[in-house]
Image 1: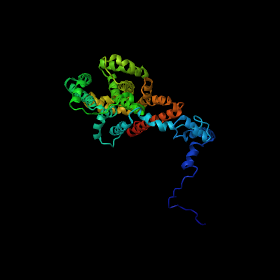
Image 2: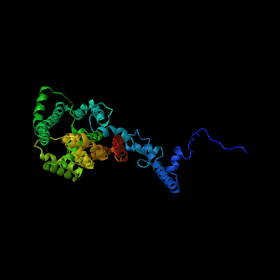
Image 3: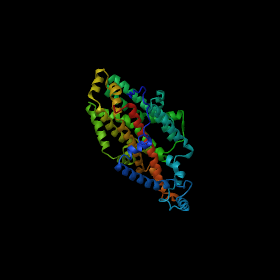
Image 4: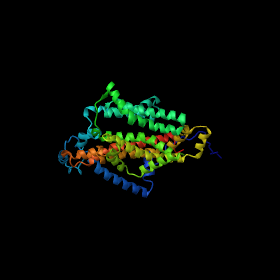
Length: 434
């Protein structure tokens, strides 16, 4: 009898998965056509998408880019057999003609390079803050950028932003000297009181003397000429940049053992969070001048920036307080066991972990703040929505609606989507889920 047994001496080579199980076909079969109900639901959704795109795409891809009025748009659409603006296609001529106004408001066209340069320098200033690979030496420029931006956009004497910057230097040295000589409370009070004295009492006469000795500056631009997305970015970036450090201080103050400091922080946070932003904007535009000395001229945009920053700071404080509360008590005990003082413990151990936990809430607050800048149109500032109303008042574009609001929505979406993507990148980088 012949022995039929056989022992394989080599490994069977791998074979590719069947086409029905791998690749795009396998993905569709697994996720969209796995069973009868899933297949029916997929078909219904695809039909709805087809119907929606069938109506939207012809409207978007409308051959009206070179039109100069709504009447001409309707004539172009009628020639190609569409039933007119609104149903037949968009009138993109208004965007071609007015996009610079939507971006810069009534800023002088020959000086557009100034806000454009400010925006480019903003990217340079944010680079070392947002990304690790950028040299830390640029942080010095990050510190002085707000004053450079102010001078570029508003113009005027160069000594004014320099004098304001000196006030922050005075605040820093006041805190350091007061903290070392008399304790942290005196340091905080010195950091607050000294720059206020400098800005409100000494700045104006010193600035006048410097201007008389060496007048340096550029063409001044009135605030009522600022508008469009330039204004929205100015208010949004200012609120975002200032609300985070102020929110951190408010959150720490709310958890402080000092009754007066804690009471002030709690009252501020609860009051601001209990009042709508539009109410604060009305206060900034109408009532704030009542509390100022007679004859003083406090710029409206600056008042709005202050109110928006205070509003965002109160919400930021609660977000960061949640991160502080989420830390286990052992982290605080570890800082004490290392012999660190309060500020070193917060800077090296507590705040890095609390801010990492709070990243989603922080970015969500930033996005909400940037979108809330559209509320300034209610108090007369010409943000993108205010300019849209102004453009629609022109007889040539009277009746335009969706095109302007669609363009504004697209720009806001780009900014907000970018912030949300960066938030997800930062969460993955810091591994907040572990």
